[in-house]
Image 1 (tube, helix red, strand yellow):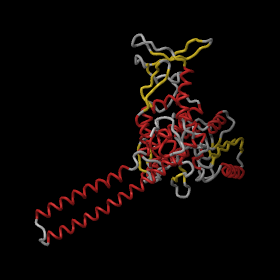
Image 2 (cartoon, helix red, strand yellow; image 1 turned 90 degrees about the vertical axis):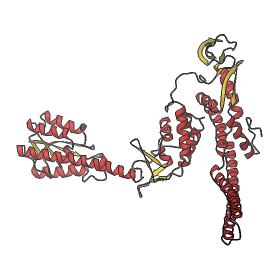
Image 3 (cartoon, helix red, strand yellow; image 1 turned 90 degrees about the horizontal axis):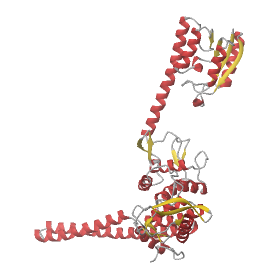
Image 4 (cartoon, rainbow, N blue to C red; image 1 turned 135 degrees about the horizontal axis):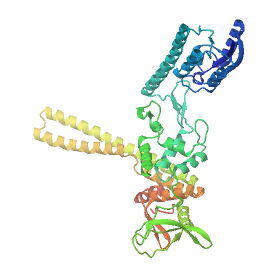
Length: 492
């Protein structure tokens, strides 16, 4: 009788596998030599048997069906099958007489009704073990999630801690991830431009790969960075340290929602389509290809839906020059951006200190009022004051106390209200420089929509109105740096 050796190791069980493939083959070879079995071929693979579809296993069965062997030697029945399909194939081939013998150093089998019954039980036990293990693993993962611990690989900005089995903040990449959220929240950046920014900042995945556009999308929509965990569409509270606020995360989701879709795909080849309207008739501006001056150019014009209009066509290259000229005037280099942001942070720290000192003074006044109320009560109890006098003086003191408490609450809750708009304003000016350096025309359109309103064409000139919040944010930015001159919206 001719036999084949079959050894298998599950790739999912590297740390728990009892015998490696080499060890199995060594044991089987020793067993075969001792029993004087005729070995004609060896088959081995590293693949789980929980599901059908093993390539080498199928090759072995084909080898036997071709009549080249009529017996199998393996370490245990669970090496052959842990699912009902593959187990059924083995039993069916025994019934057909294609497999006349199955040998296991740890298990007995004979091709008799009793042997087939025992083999069926062995395969069933193997399948039960796999199914039970799968459920135990799932239950363990669910419990780990309930305990606030992420059971998988850490996202960019975090690292898996092999000692604690927890998730730690990556001090190198976490600030970059936070900056990624801050940039996108301004509405002036596209996913593509942020993917380029990640390349420039050497921000990579934990596997060492470059951050792609889809990676950026996944990062920006992952609530893990706020201390929450999304697992099978359900949100859980995590024990890991958040790297950004829920407010910033919600702002990013709002920007994504306003853009109508998460994936940013190129819908057309006209970079500035949808940006402007005609200043004269108010009709939308459309674009088309047309011949002119010996070539084919893109032209922008009104849609003619509101009748005759005197405005003329405008070639895209001319419009692009006008827009780039404007961006050049308002752009702020990365170096200058950092200077202004640093100055704003100093102003923030100073203003917070002043607010803290003001709150402490008010709290001291509260303590004084509490003492006065206590003394007033003692005088009343000693019959030194009439009920009317006590009530009048008490009402006055209580009114003063309520006003002071409201002032303290206002100071503690309002924070530095001008800082975030000012910071967004500075980042938007830096984005103008980035758009120019990358020649990102679609990004320029998004930037102009974000900073302005009423974009239009008048006498072949592009014009728009700056949004009020940018004018309001410009003043503290200009005040924060006496050495830098902002060319737009920045008059003091």
